[in-house]
Image (cartoon, rainbow over all chains, first blue to last red; front, side, top):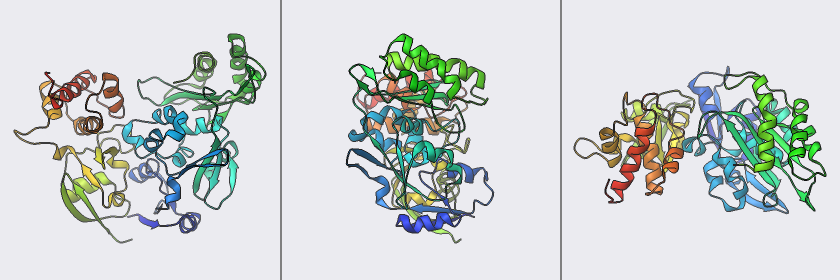
Length: 266
Length: 160
């Protein structure tokens, strides 16, 4: 039997997690581990009912999304409309009723499509102790994180500047061969400060910095997209898995990036 | 680590029982309530055969911690209809050969009911999206999609 501890505040829950409890957000990761007895020492689960985990609000120019917001809840929210297609790409409707923004930051390969989008949008991770960390830094050490993610924050992109595409073999829903997110701010028709992120192309979602640099100061045309695609071999280190081989993923990544850049996302 | 009391509504009836720590909703429904309609398939959120409706939203009962349904409303296929009084979805699944081995049917039916409850007149694409988290290894899906569309028409009072 597993000890399920339920707290009203993030502070109490954080203490319980830091002393070895496993945090229960939406359940899609923890319950799988429980059902399969997949984790040694998983004998204590920590829940928290703090309403701040469900908040969606503006803080200055940044949109703050509570970590406990489910994909279904996000799809219904107009302030986060630019992320609704990303949320729809996560699982089927029943998964989206449970899967949370915070949980997606910890979803193992090849999952984590939502985190990929957040990465391209330069999101910050806000933890329950009040500290903030860039998402790309957070992802590199997420396996050792022993607190609770309270929220993520990001600047809302200009209309049309954010694109997302999930590539899978099974339609309409399948596990990602890869997901690609691109934030492409433009100034006078030229791309400035682009960010490109890939999911399922490494142990965690990763930024494709060399590809993004290839877009800098350019207009979005075929030659620019080809240059960015050619840089992906320097950015991505995928592994073989049952969905696709690393070789296949690397071969098709430039094609899917080019389509995203020239044709737009989902 | 004691058992915990949980009160909820199950197919319109108030229920109160004790659950073990870490027990999932599917176990609670099958062993505690005795409702064998939701099925255990994969236990990891891939197959959808354990889909139930909680407060109007489809959920995977195998990935739901039982005690989190305190005070909530749960619908399962067991409450859809029985005998002569089948729900239009059940009738159309039966008449349209949308069930072969039948293992996926309870999850498919609840995914479909959740869709029709909030969108009584769905498009084919919306039906496909609604059951996209539910796997069927027998039918090839087309019979299921057609059955859901026909049930929607019946519920709307349109000719099928």
